[in-house]
Image (cartoon, rainbow, N blue to C red; front, top):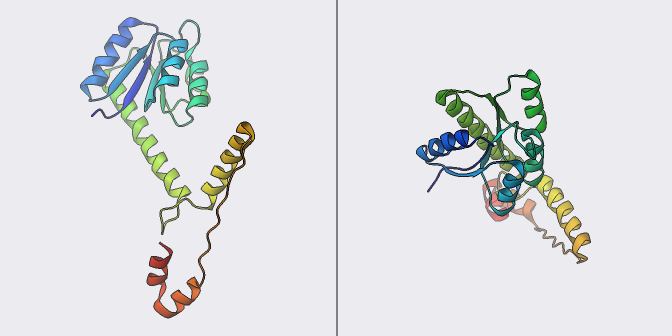
Length: 191
């Protein structure tokens, strides 16, 4: 089983042919696209764990592609690479939502370091997000996540013209259980 499924987007065949075997060597699965249009088609049909994108490409530049990919998958970690050394490229890439930026030519060591850092940071952010949206005791979604899901459900209901259903469950006498048997037993009852 591969570690990550990575989308490589670069109009230069030599760069694609360099990166794909490198990712396979690390145990990742890769797909290639030669431009932004092809990349968008691939991401609509498949899920990816990360993308590595060139800035200058025909049909759609990497900054525009980054914005489009993040519109489709807001949590996708993206590394932008470019052979153009202008400072505004890095600022534009990060401003578009890319997590990492690297200039070509790059060493394999630098590329590995930046890619691994990006994926490590992404995993930590996902773990924090899960913690922020779940109840510590039960592991169920908390109030914050309830409101997010309710908003999404209502949008779907309006779009599909269906009525949503909300089920409310209340637990009586939890205070009595806590008072008579202790908080540990009250927690178990709640779980």
